Length: 240
Length: 379
Image 1: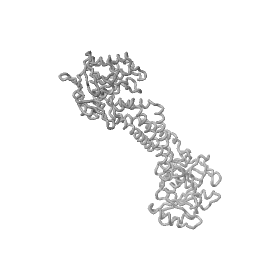
Image 2: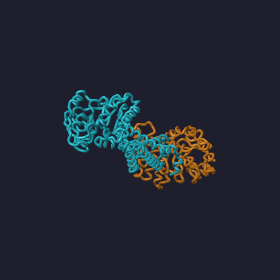
Image 3: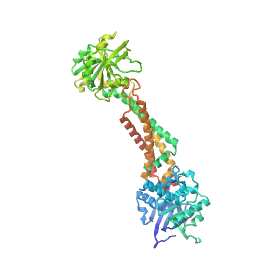
Image 4: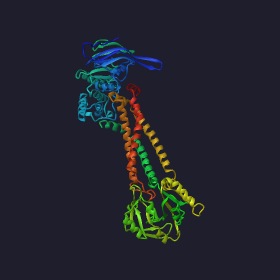
């Protein structure tokens, strides 16, 4: 069993004895079993593994989108299992940014309005929100396409807008579920470069699920899951 | 307000569907407004009728006369405070469409019984002093822009010829909201001029000492004229007017039934539309929740959409009724109180809000309970 220990360093994510079971009638499906994981602040971690190995489930649990069957998850010292639904929602909006494979932009909103969505939940004024959105869109190099709707953007641009939306509240943790899965290689490389930049330049902690070894290679650490168990940890550049 | 663009953007996502749903609300509220106007118009007579007044008509039919000689016999019945009478004249002013009730009255007793009629003393005196004098209700005078001193010709429909009247006064009801669209002239003038029907009246109006004893007084009146050539039928004025309105059916029941059916249908249609709209956006709602929108926040967004649709539709429907009824009574006098009141508009708007909330509530609740992971898995 793999356990990344960041004791002694600034640990952002700590997962302990995490189990997740799904029930289908009388059948019990163990999606995650006894997972332990420490991720240091600013670390870029890629999760790899076959379909059904539990990668996305782990990401969902760390993001507070799903509840574990047992075990604990702490982010920045906060045990998110203990949070009420309302506090968990608030915590998520402040600490975590999500990037999906299919971008998940709202089609009837412009790029600006999509990026602004998380800020609507804050007490920022309209002009402050505008400033934040413009900054986020500048970081992803889409400052000139604020008024475009998702249907007017290419796949790569739509994913950049989604990344801008994920970082606009300046969260410490970014969770990316196959962010290049729907993109061609060249466009995907651009997105990976951007993620790398967010990690190195802006100090974001990133957990990324991917099937693509090339994508995983840009991470500081690659973790492999198999049948719900973290089986292998690999520092970037090391042979597996 | 910062969420308004989000709500509006969702409404404009399927413009045609939104327009149709707004149209449904507009139609329903138009119907509600119109039915309310008709209900009020039909019931207005009953609403202003005195509780202490009885109406005595010929048992055969309202249009059959009663002898003038009944006046003193009715007055002598125990429980009767005063009595007066009227005769339906049925005259036409200039054109058939200018219908209004015109009635010959007993000037000596009429105001004793209808003590809720208000007319300046000097105008009433002028009316009494002129055998061809007449007094018109305020609504009627306004309708034809009549001024005191105007000469008003009426073409007789029961008694032929052109009958000339001098307008000597304008009366109002004590309750200013009550209709004042009748035209009164002297019974003596009618008696002198009509070629037939001498010594008869249309109906008697009896003021009772105690409204609680109305039933026994009515029974005494009808009993007194039993087996005579002119048997009577006595009822309270309110019952009479309500019964008159009910001759074309139980209006209120019809109105309530139609209204209920329309609103239940509207609720089903709108609720279904909202449910489809929410179902189509399952992934987007999951994204909003992922970004930090609470369940209650998502519920609020769905209800806000539904409320905007219902409010716009409701306002359009009610404004259409207001426009339609701005010219007043379309029947030329049968429905004198024909307008959409502020209260009715308020009630209509409140119904719109309620329907909008209910229509948005069920799909909104399902959006609120939507599990994020489950939602992403579903799409």
